[in-house]
Image (cartoon, one colour):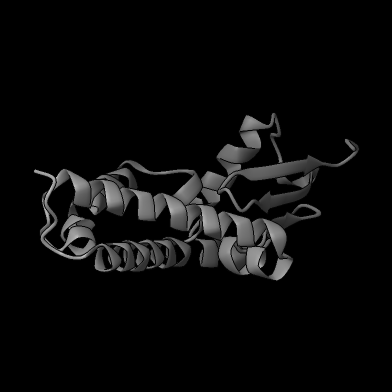
Length: 156
């Protein structure tokens, strides 16, 4: 139950590599999908852990192996968070930057397309902020966490 079938350094390296691969895939998918999951996106995330489990532990089913892999994942996350918080360039690389979706009532369609946000999703975000018309919008920004911030004309 507690005997490892592979070495501790290999377990740690596997966890770091899987963390990096999943992080990269989530960055490629985009902010919208991380912040506002559609049902099929949630299914993918739930199945993801099953897909990478073998890669994390190389078939090691010991409690020790699982704890080491989990500790390596948490440790990697802490290191990434530290570097992101202490360096603006690293933060921008890891987290991206906010994207302007609407500027002075005009929709930036190329940004919507690149971020995979539909017009109806944008309008829904506007309605959540109590806005009934694009002409009232000074700006709409897709934040790094996937949320859409709205600034209305005449409201500062």
